[in-house]
Structure formats: C-alpha cells, structure tokens
Image (tube, rainbow, N blue to C red; front, side):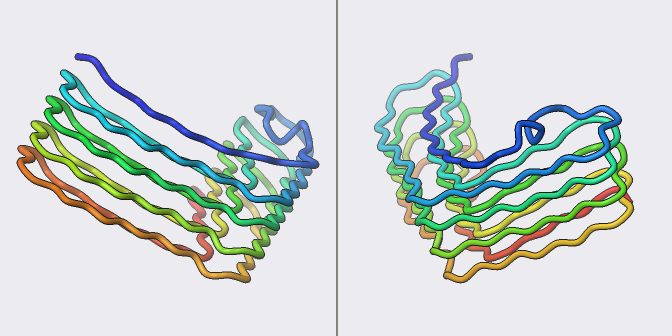
Length: 208
C-alpha cells in the first residue's frame, strides 16, 4: 500500500533557549523565551488522482513552538510572544483514491508542550497580537476509504503532562481566530469527517 503526503510548514522562532528542545533528565530548570515578529504563511495546492493507497496533505503555519520531553525537571519557564499574522491554506482536488484521505490546514500563534515524568513548577506565558486564520477548500470523489478534512486556527495552546506540582499559566490573544472549510464530496465508501475550529486560548493539564 502506497501513501502520498504533501506538507508545507512555515516556522520562525527568535531568542529560543537551546535547552527548550533537549530531552532533560533530572534537569533543575528550563528557561525558554521566544519572540517572532513577522508574518508566517503556509500554502498547499494539490490535485491528486488515481492513488492506490492513502493520501495526506498538510499546510501548517506556526509562530512559536516549544517541546520539552524527558524524565524529571524542577522548573519550566516558558514565555512566547508572537507579533505577526499567521495563516494557512490548503486547496485539494482528489479522485479515485483507494485508501484514506486526510487534509489539514493549521495556523497556530504559540504552542507549548511539556511531557515529563515529574515537574515541580511550570510557568507558561503566551501573547498573540494578530489574528490566525486557516482555510481548507476540498473537492473529492471516488474515495474508497475514509475522508477527513480539518481547518484549525489557534491563538495560544499549551499542554502539560506528568506528575505536576504547580502550574501558572497566562494566555492572552488580542485578535480573532478564523477557520473556514468548504467542501464538495461525493462517492465516498468510508466515513466523512469535516471540521472547522477557531480557538483563542487552550490549556490542557494531565497526570497530576
């Protein structure tokens, strides 16, 4: 079974601590500061036909991103500021696909993920000044598998997992988030799922 994948990703991060992307083991503290000034844009325009496998296409524009993974850490301090317009668009025309189809257009201002066995203190601060926007336009027919299309625009998002002591989080979005999805779908054998999600601030904490 063959797969076809399209990916457009645009990221820009300034002033990032080098520790932010390491896998810390028994580290006392991680201090990350990220500032992006400028527009981030991702665009995919795909015409796909006669595929004997799965199809995946993604347009992802991200202002600032932080990932912390590892064993234990005392303190994680994260400050992310994004001063620009982040936008993504995906236009897809698909026909005669044997497998599943997944299309995603995602525009994110600031995103942080902390996934460790244990952490005493997490301080998370995220600011976004301009509006994120994501658009997905889809025309699909003769799909023998499932079809999934997602347009997601998120200002600030943070996820914290592990044995957590204390979490202090501030998320501020000064502009609207916009997600748009238009679709014309026919002759799909599997399930069809279409989602347009516009989110200002989101915080997830698990494991305490």
